[in-house]
Length: 226
Image (cartoon, rainbow, N blue to C red; front, side, top):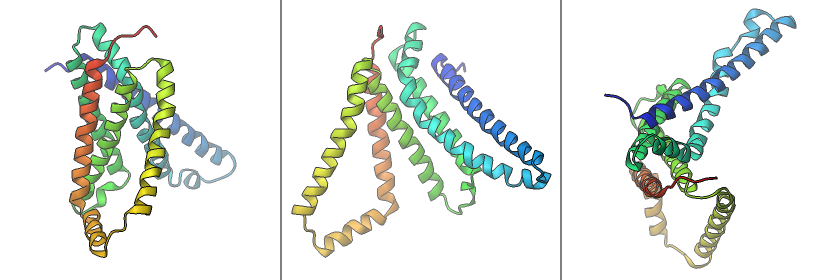
């Protein structure tokens, strides 16, 4: 089965840029180790902990690229798809397939960083859910921004976090001033927070909302001149 064109182009861009990050970090570590040799350190001292230090530097950068990519790419992929005869639905499905692919890849990076040592399935599923929840948020935001001109991107990008912060502060203030729960209520809430199933349900609900928003935004996108 031939993979969708938008998906192929997207993954080529994603992993090509990630390879550049990988090679850049690797080159810096090699130069650092060689410099250590030139200053009189032994070969063992110069390359001691090379692998762990390299992974501890590269993997966070890979995660940053993972989140940033789907803030940047939705309109680019929409434009590419429309110019090559793809429907909005096909473009959206290609992007969802890309999200699944990159989430699996970053989950494997997490395993490489030491996540493999857990004895139960819960941390693995929880980590995977966190990764896909984060990237689905980035994709929903990126898809929403794809509807806007550059001017409105700046306005919305500044105004939205400000409004959210103000609303959160007001909610906290109202809770402090007017909500005085009983000990039984606090105990029930504590039990609910401690139950891992509640976090899984919230994560799945969040994922469904973000995917739904991204679909809605993608179906409304138009080619722009700017």
